[in-house]
Image 1 (tube, rainbow, N blue to C red):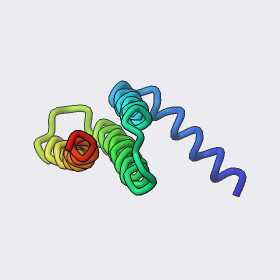
Image 2 (cartoon, rainbow, N blue to C red):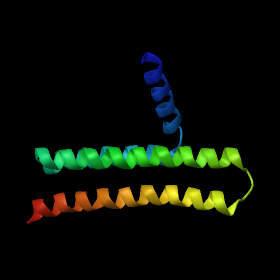
Image 3 (spheres, rainbow, N blue to C red):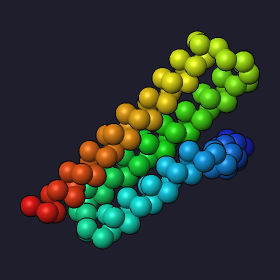
Length: 111
């Protein structure tokens, strides 16, 4: 069990070495700061944390898919490019969902 956690934390350290993952972590921290400023209730915090977690996990998985694609074929391959695009689309979809949750929480405070 200890080795599995060590492997996971090594993977997280590796993921944080990638700019896209660091950007998502930074945006997640900004969302948390914004949540503190507008004083989210318990359910809104739950939604925020779930959204932040999904976006960051999506970005980490996208990074893994990109590395696998690069490992399998360093040349431009349309099939690998499509797989990378699909993985990137998952990050985009989760980010849009998180943005909608954020907007709804902010609008609720303004009304």
